[in-house]
Length: 250
Image (cartoon, rainbow, N blue to C red; front, side):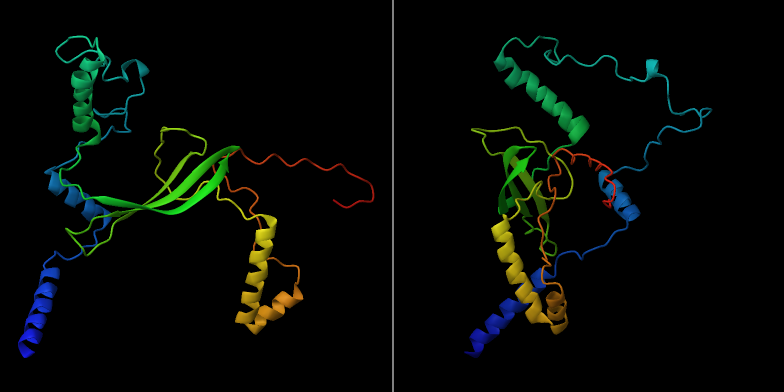
């Protein structure tokens, strides 16, 4: 029994040592993070941008006639060897790979070969209306595999909105911003009354002072329906001024 306990203790100690072999976490300032990235990329100095001084050699240009440094863009349907794209096969097998290579090298950057796996889970599914169009909105969380460095968690919050009546694949526009559902469905009046009744009771039971305040305002409802929760919908209509009626206060 002692031998088993000793082996178990040795295994736990070895696991703890292995867990501590990871480099420690470092909190960089913005400047330190910038310099660290430059060091990793082997960049010694950045090219200065245009100067606001018109007399400087590298002054900013405001002349539209010379504003385009690349007047001769490559033809989309011409191979780099000068041959024309005349069939779908030439496009898919020759010209499109050329364009993808140019975009990877010059614009977007290359995807690392050992990029970690992301596991996506749907947290919320909601049927909503965006500008009178029914949609299905999903709040999704992507958990990045952190097995190479378990000391940190990397999660991606995302909202996916697609037309509810779509019969097949639809285009998706990707935007960076808060992962909020665009127009969360609101409870109907009966459901809202049920929620408010339960909430009033919960609040009254939690504190005598809150109970006294609720008894003083018996018609108060903690929750109300939001007037407009659609961030993509049209703005609310302008308020129509009421006519002046003698003897009736505004």
